Image (cartoon, rainbow over all chains, first blue to last red; front, top):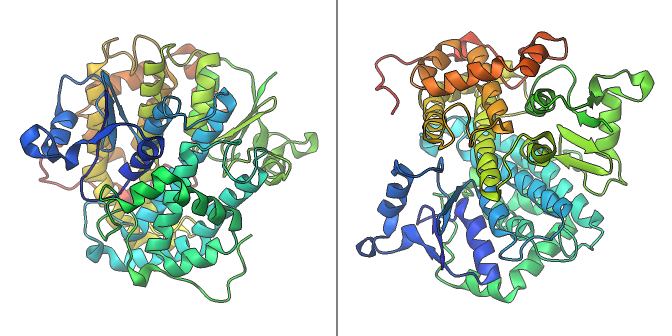
Length: 251
Length: 251
């Protein structure tokens, strides 16, 4: 039976990390909120599921996944669940835990990238928090982004299975999520991302290899891939792409 | 062999979620950075471990845990690892995933509570971001906190194992973390937390029961429990405890 992915239909957002895993594995899935309302899909089906008082394990927010009787929220938990059946995680417990630890660090960075345009209120528009956004984005571009990317670089280079993957010698959901993170950073902060990625060549190479995987490549060219926009987590507001000059190189 | 917990020695912070699990289970552990430098402990031992280039799986930041050869970062991943040996998680895969999903949602709320006093820069002082903090705290106290607590209330009430626990009929690490979350909210936002918790009686009851567990009670009275302060995640800045009047009751 096909997996049911529930997420906002017009943005990549956090749902994209799940979509990429399903697509890279060639797993059958229905992107419920993007389906026709007339067939019991659409946003209203997603909201019905969120508000259903008979659901034992209600998710706090999208994305969430339904697999038969199982309903799971939280992006990192969904990927942990999908890892074994989609063969996107190694078998050993220690490798699984490390993959999840990397995923959680990616999730932290995604939250920080989001907060550059929404530093004081998720319920407010960007236009209502621009001065605050400028301050937050300056720190993100010049300090946090290099620091995170240097950590990813370090763990790719140290991977005993080789620097083609984050964990061992096989593709994992964390590789796919790191690909998406780099895509998002390059879209939202072209100048700051270029500078920070110039110091993280192994991360760039891993990203580039993921992009050429046949299923990923086909997905990225398809209409199923929603374009980046100024509605999602990664938004291109040129005034937030702040590269301070004369800073010491990130270490 | 005793677990080694590595975390900043003067704050509860995210390390406290791990400490509570170890304490509630009566597990032997060394709180490394709080130990004497002369015995190879202290903050410098923690930093050495973070910077050790021979470590295969370096954590991004504290807290992290060492268990023999295993080194794990990310609070939620540490708790997932400790759950089975400390008997702080159920046996079934589905219950384990649900426990982790709850933990990740607690972690999200913890991050939002932190960001009330650091909305634009973790590298800046609170005093340098007070206007931004006031805006962020207003949304947190009046919208986000009630929304999260209503979700916790819902899942406690719906737990098929009874409302004494979050998952099934046994204590889990998520119960302990929810206890700590309520403690932190009450410390940092006494007025806003009182209002939001008045609509979440099952959460309050669960919190109160956790406080009376003999090992938890003994820990809370001991010197091992670091007091809340204006250095940690939960800080009492009275100007940020913002209760808007005349708002509709949270649903």
